[in-house]
Image 1 (tube, rainbow, N blue to C red):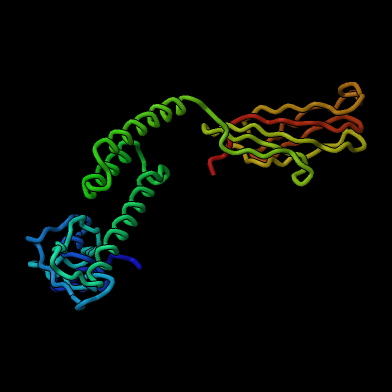
Image 2: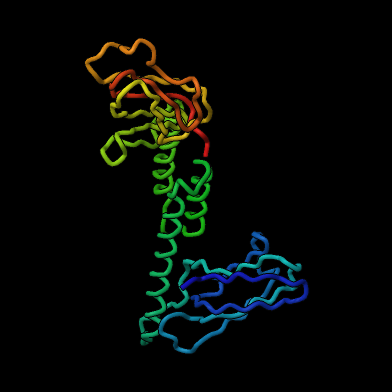
Length: 277
């Protein structure tokens, strides 16, 4: 179940309904165009089901004092408040539905915390380490009973070490994608680096005569300004036909032609900047 509702203002409507369950009025939060609203901006009327075994409330409505503007994005969402709703007395018989609600509140809060921590640690979705620290701090402020100050200090130390490691790593160029030569890819290989630099190569089969052999690159280059090498794989002198051995000067970003002379096979290698797409 999703514990939020997305709505849109029309400039006149003040009342907006939601149908997800919650445990207390402090669990409900409202934003308008990503700006957090306070109880000075709206009133909450909760829908209560007597003796409900799961939650105290099953929905409700938000009534704004001033109607949100036309096209305003309104979000009503649940974030469980970590406070006790029932103070059990030793002389009173506890009700089973109240106990169920108390346990469900704890389980719900733990689930929310798990999701927040997963999102916080997902570095791919957070642009900077500072944003990550800000996210973790926000979690500890909204759920103080789950993470202590010592826990936050430990996390901050770990993130600081991570930031140092990332800074060091950013000073190096490294392989981000590669392909090993196999029979299935005609023994072509490549290594793509973080900077955009690429190294790639492969083999050509031998063929009669000194005809031009066309090489199609597995990784397109940025342009034709790359370095190309070829090496004969045969017990023959270079250019044994007397003329044709080397790389054709008619290079493109995606292919090149080579001459190997007589029946020789060759190994080729290309180095330069890869195309950005």
